[in-house]
Image (tube, rainbow, N blue to C red; front, top):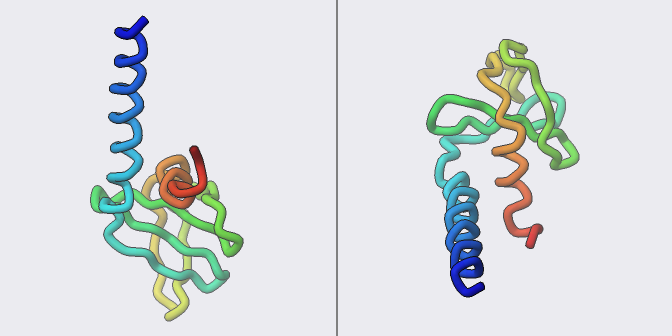
Length: 92
């Protein structure tokens, strides 16, 4: 029984550290014209947060316009990675 408990604790510690590392992996965030925000991770993948603060699905290759008028193309769809980052302090 003690081995099972220690195994569960070890697995939990690894998964928690994986989510905690995501905040350090964000290279920059870019506000969009429609109120959304695109997060660019250091590996080049992107995730989008809508104007209500929710991680949102976006097709790879979709063209988005920033608040300053620049166009950027969505690379990847890291919705779960971004969701974990947005809600890292809200889940048990």
